[in-house]
Image (tube, rainbow, N blue to C red; front, side, top):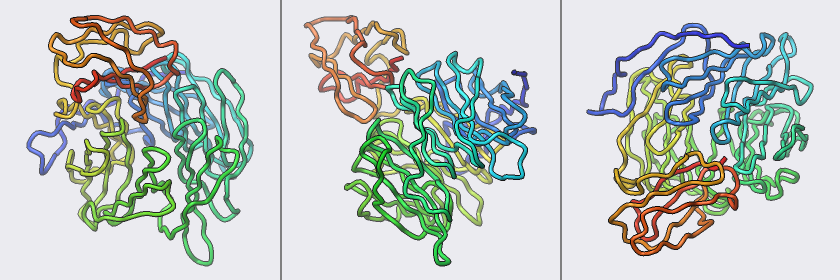
Amino acid sequence: MQKSILLSSLLSLICLSGLAQSPWSLVSETQTNNYYSIYAVNKDKVVTTAEWGMLFQSNDGGHTMQAYQLDSNFSLFYDVAFLGQQHGFAGGGCYFTTDDCVENVIASTTDGGQNWVWKQIAAGVGVLADLSVLPDGTVFALGDYNGLFRRQPLSQNWDSLGRPGIIESGAYTGMQFLDTKNGFIEHWTFEAGQNLTHLLRTTDGGLQWTEVLTGANSSQQPFYYFLDTLHGFQLSNNGQLGRTVDGGTSWTTEQAFGTSEAILKLDFVNPSVGYLSTWEMPAQIGRMYRSTDGGAHWSLDLKADSVYLQDFHFADTENGYAISNYRQILRRTGSVSTSMPQSGSILSITPNPVYGLATITLPENRTGDALQIFDSLGRMVQQIELAKGQQEITFLTSGLRAGIYFLAIQGQADEVIKFVVN
């Protein structure tokens, strides 16, 4: 089921105009397949989806890509996401009735991507183009035409939750679940000679949906991103960034970037650190911006000619990957931000990912008297008191759901590390 393809390794740096020392480099390029979506499992391991029923995986920072041919009858895989290091999912299918392929396919792995199995979860033309994998193991899959599906923890079955709010003239274009109850879906329609984007919200896990916003939109791509159930962003084709603090009902807009820059994607690694990509026409310049204050301010992280960054994903606040021009893998290996932990802060947490029990080694010069644990939404879920002079603590994760967490020393903003509970 798998074959090795050694893609040409391009070790030279991209032309990074405007940045004296860029953390980005071009690590590989394919001549045979188009990449669509990318996921950084950790700083060295990355997985991409591709056409012709294929997935690609690298364990060496994107330099060597291993091809996995799941089935020659799939037209493409589109989205991919992992829960921890071992459990991954990819959504695929085909767009047209004339295609000789399998529609609405989910592939999954339980061994870190070494082996994949697939199943069709719905009939009818369509691609499962958006996945949300939650820390408790719940997985949502959105088909562009077939609606929403859910797989609950420990189950192998997919439940159809219907077609939220859509009418026959449109297609689903984006999905984001914040937890098992709260999520957002976008769908595009063509009504009365006009393209419209509809933003829907659920508070009961996708059973019922409320339309919170309808607006004109000339593009059929996701244009919303939410940090939590109230705070979100609205992306535009003219460099404007919208913000909401009421769950998407009302928005304020600012000219955050150049008027010729189309905002392609926005994603946050944690509640503070996020990245945003744009494409400037007709100059054909790709840019990546970075925020360390929850999106209040953005700084230029990458600028390159003829580099179209259609997708990216980060393993942590400094290390990530992007797909450029559907054929290239870019890697970011930047230095630690001043707002993130410096060398020698919390010395170690082992193992990471954590499988039940972990050992935390503390810095000698700490001033805080407690360890605080935050989930991926920035909510404190546990606090552990520390004895004076204590240098090591054994930490049991049985009370935490699987997912990404952040460990901080109370009162020391720069003492933060990220860990994964499996």
